[in-house]
Image (cartoon, rainbow, N blue to C red; front, side, top):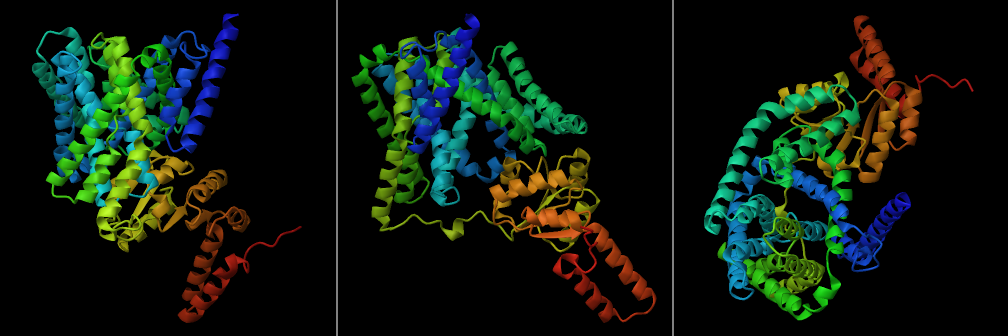
Length: 566
């Protein structure tokens, strides 16, 4: 039955995706390669468990759409401005110089016309953001000088994806020389950036605030999906790509207080659908065709890695950084990246590149990503030999920590706002998390750092830097919500002290049992404050009042807590 066949294909996709991603992740090669290999295994050129990979590919393309959205949402103008020299100087030089050299080789050696050669050269000049960021984060090198250089290049490469996607339909139309097409694509990208900044500041926050005021999570998620897919459809309808539209939607959200919660809501869709995309790429690889091109694939791979590493090392040195730093950056980014799959698959669908050639390029990209950990290890080893290092250490002068640790306040109602104003008067930095858009607006109008989101989500805690915070204050008047926040905080930041506002001593005991560091029952605190004021009205000694109140607060208010009747 067709229904049984469809169910079998779904089960095969899920099983292979989980197994392949797990195995390759354990080997340190990344889930992307696992998806590619899994796709080859179950595709029409492997075990033939999937008979119609085109349907999977169409569905998987939405993963690319969500990926571009999340990249756009990370490109905050303020962040780009701080790193402008590295991003727009070093990053632009890397893409343009590497792309030019590879394009000339593709034109002279592979016989491509200049339009095709330029697309291939610039596409292969892009490195793997997934592998680069993963290695830098795993090795704790994101905050050191050479790690920031690598991150800057990856950031510019992510931006470069947009004009490259815009270039494909221009090349497919064939109505202008490649230089003119590149110019159109660049100007189109600049116009998009300028327009989205203006539109984002005027429209996005008010609309999201209106949707969030319903306090219905599924409606909020639905609107986030509508924003991404709606912009994708709009760009697609005017002749560009859905991925570009999603990128624009991400830029609109980059400065919004709702961005973190939107990221959390979109991530599961992105991960699932992007996995399908990479598996569909694997399914499209004709093993028979590639076996006949083994020598060509290996030659292109070696030339690609050598050229990219050499150019990156030279450019980093030209910016007056040390040779060991340059070697590590070159080793980290010598591969081609996942956007090559996206770009070349798009080019094939538009008729710009033919199928067998794209299959060869896909194999080269996959192999270059597979050897990235090996290349990175060699680069680090060479750098250590040149500097006589025994271990790679983080330079404390390069730390991104700019001051005292902050406090995280979950909930900005009357209690949270009072705490915030006290901390502000004491010049103690803090960040507010709340699911009420009115509270977020109030906090931002007061000049406080505030993020719309659910503090019970680990992703939100990571986004606000809870792992490096001084403590977490939970002021929510909902015991079940507090329980979820405590559980999430203990999983994500097990050493983070948590201070919790509770209604009474019974709830306080429950929260301490769940891991709260300190609890404050508001009914008992109100009793103590009122009692102290009564004593002052009767001219009691102030030192005696403080001593009594301190004693009653000690040992978790047990002296005044209601006694159990059991």
